[in-house]
Length: 284
Image (cartoon, rainbow, N blue to C red):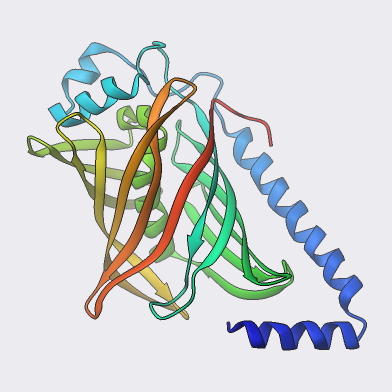
């Protein structure tokens, strides 16, 4: 949506006395997202299903094991059960579109693939778009609202479930012990390349990780469904990671970008920077 269209909507809202209603509905939207976050975090198991042991580690391809040892996520002798990430960055919705700054928080669980991502995007001065991506119990729900009130986009279904599962797989670099999840299997591809396969909620997905010689993953590529105005097509999705930093002693990528490698050319649409990462965080 162009910022002039957004401004026109705002003018109409003020002129028709809808501004108070907008504030109420915005509050309701944010309250509902908070409830969804609490519901997701209730699923954080008291006894995690991921077990760290030498027998399991021996089954991993060498670059994956090298990466896990580098992150120091195995040092505590127990897996991460959840992680809270705070991000800032820029995104755009189409190749010729302008970049919009965003801030976001994400909670992810490791005992079963689950996450919620909530973002505030500055579309124009004084105008915000709120986004919420939820993946829970094998089902995804992507919701975008202008000012937290007017629905701009809403997507769900098996194609969206597949896309969210691919996303969970890629974001494993932020919660490394998920590499030992019973839902994930690994295949060696080359000395510095490994393919991860995930099966959950009746959906199968896979993606390929590329590692530096020192162990850090620097690229992830997968086939993922891309939704555009109600139509889903399978496209190549790529994540590039850089600038690794330790958070609570665990080394994860703090910067990166995401693009769709489309037939018309690459569409770079998302740039992120991790500002905070808290592991085993279960508070909202």
